[in-house]
Length: 134
Ligand SMILES: [Zn+2]
Image (cartoon, rainbow, N blue to C red):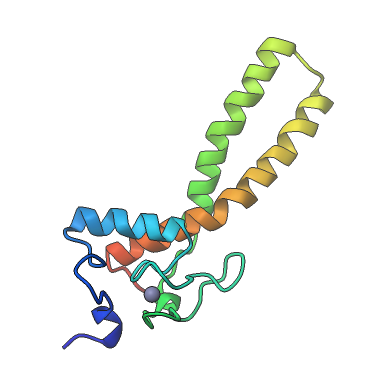
């Protein structure tokens, strides 16, 4: 017997066709910060806080635990943007350390804050696709 939240896709078009499709669907819906199960309801109740359940399909979104994965992937991504940028700036202009820090520290913080909610959504979608809860 399936729980009500597992029966959401009302149409054949809503349901992923394969595991790969389910994986990509989960990432796409999560990256848009939507419920990975239906793609219509909001998954987030705030900046990073997950809703306990989807308003549209009642999928228990709050049961997924993203833990440290979103910050890890965010730092990984931002590091691959900031470090080459700082090195390129150093190689081409040789600015003072004060200028380097005044450019790259705020850039790092802003990029992390900008990417984190979307990456958390993608991690949520991945967990949904792989049926990882708790
Ligand atoms: Zn939903």
